[in-house]
Image (cartoon, rainbow, N blue to C red; front, top):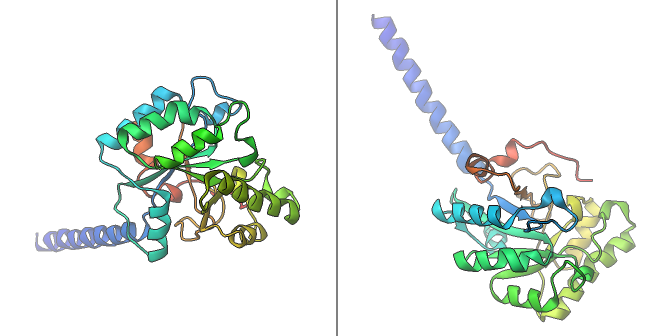
Amino acid sequence: MRQIKIFLSGLTVLAVLTFLIFTFWMHDHYVVPVMTYHNISDVASGRSLNNVTPRAFTWQMKFLKKHRYNVISFDDLVDGLKKGHVFARNTVVIQFDDGYEDNYTNAFPVLKKYRFPAMEFLVSDKVGTQGFLTWDQVREMDAHDFKAAAHTRHHVYLPDVSLDVARDEIFGSKKIIEEHLGHRINYFAYPSGGFTEEVQGVVQEAGFKAAVTTNRGLDRLNRDLFALRRIRMKNGDNALTLWAKLSGYYNFFRKAKDAY
């Protein structure tokens, strides 16, 4: 009987130590989820796999509000990462790619309702064309905490083009957006998440503070400000899926892709 008690006592100590080690590991490995959207529409304009309906998007935003997620701006995320800030486990960032017009008509009103900041990565030369945001819409969104950022001029896959073309796409998109908005643009998104060390260098040379990818590269902790991983949100995401994606540890369970 005494041996059994000693054995059980040892198991208890081991369980407590395991819990403490796991808790410490979780604290040190939490990654703020960057929620990524494209189309917010009942009928997607060209990228149906990335489409989220207005009803599903509204439900996902209600989920954040109901469960008291702290939605912060991209500026707050980058500033915190630079300072080594430890973010609360319910912290998230919301952003959109490409600059579809339905982001203005279907997402913007919901974000304003819940007072959630967000960011729109614009393909600069598509602004004002059919199915995409107009510059007036971009300016209105930007003035209401739905900030503009750059996503190249023509949405080219940067590892496949020459460095001169990449430079024009990166520098050019920044210049065009800044001219239309009248202020500096600080963030960049690699089309399809693809980048090389040379491309990263050009992004830094252009004066961006940070850049985002998809689930590419080796950095699962988002410590490389020029290869921040994001999480694609889907139309079929339910409460359990959202909980997993927004847990802060999702990057450790996703299959990583090469940078290009």
